Length: 385
Image (cartoon, rainbow, N blue to C red; front, side, top):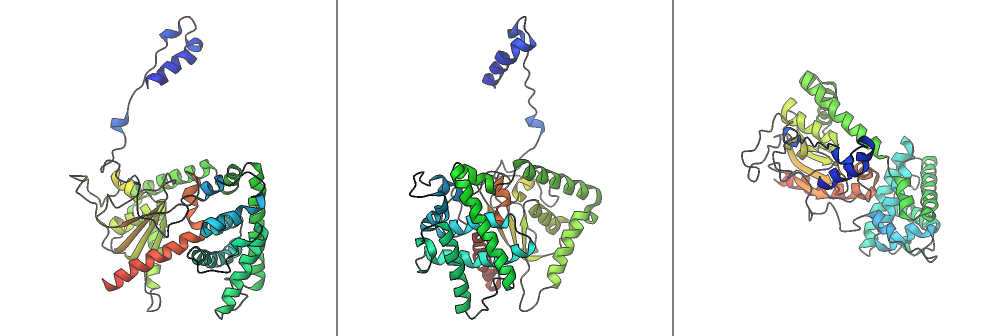
């Protein structure tokens, strides 16, 4: 504060007080003690050393691209090939992250199916169990062609129709074209400054993520305070939970709720306060702020702790297992385990920056692979426990 005041006087003093710049008054009205209070002393801030959401790999795809040699030995058309030789899943994630950004609904469905299979192949490659993994190709064009060939051959070998990948032959062809377009964007970005250009290709503008999030928060809590359980947002989410419960069958018995960002707060508010009779077998909050909102005292079901070190907030009775995923780079993601009586925090790197990370989880095939692993373990525990 002292340095800031000195700079204000030095820079603005001659403009605002030209006769005697030293007379410029600088006031610093502190209002923090009247603002937000954190009941658990900021315990929802993600700590270092949290258990990884999945297999150990690159901490940051973009950090890997930062390390790309600048010499001609690794040219702009060898970005994916270079990544694949290090951590195979990074090459898959980067390619699909760029591809899905411009895909239509049908293409996105087919790309998702291909992406999950590609992520599985990458994991086998990392474990040394994929001799046909295309990391030994000369450039990224060959890498993509080989990757598609290997995936199709794998499905045919498993007795599945070769025209699948989640769609008809024409849809699959369009999805492959979208991957080739994504490859072109990566190639075009690399010569313009390596990873900095690549970041511009795949990130969303800061203001879009920020303003949408703030608007969602204000809209929900304004509705909740005025209308309670009849609030439009609450009603729509509750209706989906009710429908999910009705759709349970003996072959599809689990109700898993995956809630991103503000969605996690809404689901928790419903299950703990507005509609406590609702339930789910697993709640997965991703890039969410449930821990933070709890600290701020905005959930009626959570009393303020008498002892933040010892006391824990209640988990709704209808939530049997709770998985919370956060990216350390995601400024809008928080942890839950220091706040709530039960629930597991898992760290996952999207490879994006502070704001890009918040919207990137669901564009990465490896995320779904790791989610499947964690849910398998959680629901197995539920079944036996």
